[in-house]
Length: 198
Image (cartoon, rainbow, N blue to C red):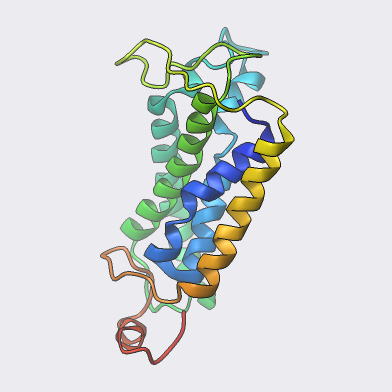
């Protein structure tokens, strides 16, 4: 497994497509959600103080990451929707609860999944190998190309991730039109014809 820097970098890399889907402010928010769960699977290190869990066990599964993302996404849609509609920093006339749910849940899921992916790429040198698809597939999956505490991988990944986000921020101005797009109808029309910037 990579260290914390590598996990945060992997979450940023996984979140990069948000620049195409949601534009500048949305991409920053989405990346924030992804970073919030970038270390979620390692919650087993805290939980094992009180529960009989092992490192790289149940918290390092797609099922765990998905359940936590769905529950947290529901909570975010309940409590953030009104706040987002009251604060005009996103410059939108109205945001639906379903949009906040999809946005938050997707960001959280991306962050947690990126952690699993990074651990699969890592040599099982200090922890057991992952079984990310447990209980549906109980065999470990190991790629074994990254070593823990490798400055080249950890800092290299963060440099690549930050550079990618800066490039996308600079050159990707107008997000795709989707059902869950955040913005007013007028702004969408303006963007379609190149009148404004996100």
